[in-house]
Length: 278
Image (cartoon, rainbow, N blue to C red):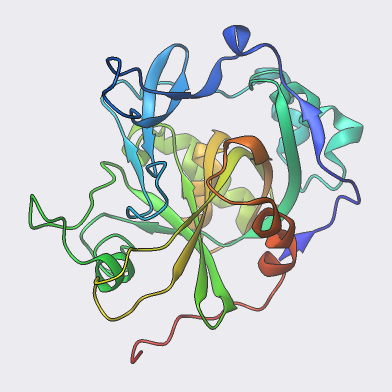
């Protein structure tokens, strides 16, 4: 479910050198080709993202230096309930100040998260992705994100593309404080629908020819949590919804302008799984 904000993309952020979170290309020696595409937090690489070519598998991979969340204490009261107008509370501008200057599309979503452990039931990387790209040719294994994550939604884009949505915690759910998760479970049981905040990217990846038979474009919308780690785990535990304010980084997504423009309409479609007999 998309809750419309009624506004176009916005210019948010601060100069990159001042931003606590930014997107970077890993530096390589001259003539060595492009380096990894990275999400960096407080100067440390936190996640490796889908590679620039667009034909490699979709990816988010937590790195050893991902140890920091980006919650803002001054926003906690505004985010404890179902935020209906983040502008009125200054939420968009407050979290925008953590990000590098650029164009962002705010989306207010209703999500019902399911916590996924890599390699187990529901894992995108060992199921849908393997069906399209096969196993990693060097390791002979599926891609491994090095973190538990949440799946929240999927739907068909068209006959040759499918949309997958993920919420990725900056630190593992096992790092969450149990008592805070339990407090949110109790609140949700009373009908509360709190709000989490994320910076997001849309990566559209399609394998080269000659890959396994289930060939289609994978639209991966990844929400990297800035605030809401305990809320998201509580929602998954209790089977309850939360609201998610997504600040979609248009200039940092691996998608063309037409796909980015289609995203709100695609996200507003009914949920549907990709057929398994194609």
